[in-house]
Length: 314
Image (tube, rainbow, N blue to C red):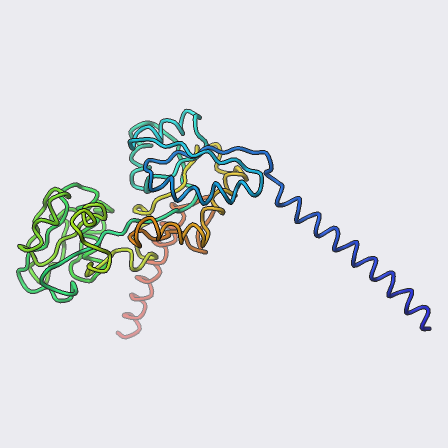
């Protein structure tokens, strides 16, 4: 009996070793799946190039060559991607991408989120937007994208309400509730830091805030404090052509970017101003229309439930 047991043990051991060998080979094959491949990524700033160097190093360990192509404006990265000169780009948020596609008959598609540059409010007078008093003045950017975002930030903070029909570009005229009768000064983004002494609060973009000597810690509110509630339109993405949305190599590059190592580098180069925009709940490739449909369905279900409850109470 002992001899049989020993024989079975030996066979089992050989089997386990064989299985282990197979698993090891499989793991090695997975790591070498893209060995020898090359991907070019367009970016629009030295800052973004610095962050992507982390991905370059990670990819190199797997035999993937990632080439960073640095552009000096926000026009060429999309043109280069659309005509096939580059494979991916990472410099823009959803709102900009959608606008470019519409104006240029493009089909560029977001694959995954990268980071978000929160819009922050600063003040020399109050410590929280909750401290705003009746009739206070609030300064916001006068361009449609950032001005609209500032109003949505105030809505996010529970200070005002805006018409949902205005989407991500509401104006002061779209404010539907303003219980504190706030007055709004719409100024060039570069001038907002200068008027801080004259207003209760001002929404200032990161670059102008930093230029004015303001830090993240000085902000009294950030629309990035709750990434989940921030409109996806303001989150930056990795994009490619519509025909390449199912490319496995590109999906792997997105996965390499969405890592703790990249998040740490992002915090380092931005002094904590920019935040990772991705989450475990993201789909790949991003299906923002489906997310909007789910949101609408949830709202409709909530309204129906409220109507039923009211009916029951009657």
